[in-house]
Length: 172
Image (cartoon, rainbow, N blue to C red):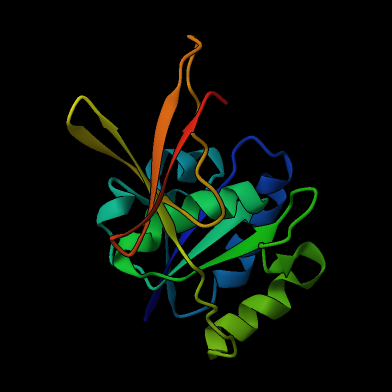
């Protein structure tokens, strides 16, 4: 039995409609659906709720939102090499794979194994300050570095696979 974790963007009104459709779709399927308990309660899907979603053994992450929601889910699932698929209810949807008009058809394809996993390049960000290195996380498209409120020079270094590429000094 597959386990699918659902990550809805609670700030998008359309999430409720999509969750209802997902709930109906999976009602008679041999699939375990999980999501955080608080979000499961929000969407009246208490049977999906788990205490610690990060501790669940899942086969697929399904995001409901736009590309930003999908990128956040990808960051969460990256370390465990769990694939993610996005249901687009955002404005653009360059990365989200499923449009609302094709939701049930595409979910059928997922369950039948009729899909292709596209591996993307992942970048990681960290900050070195006063000899201490702090890992910021993984990203699919960019890492933003801001200098903060005070005007001062930043010293930036870029590495690819632990190979030093270049150093940069910049103020913005």
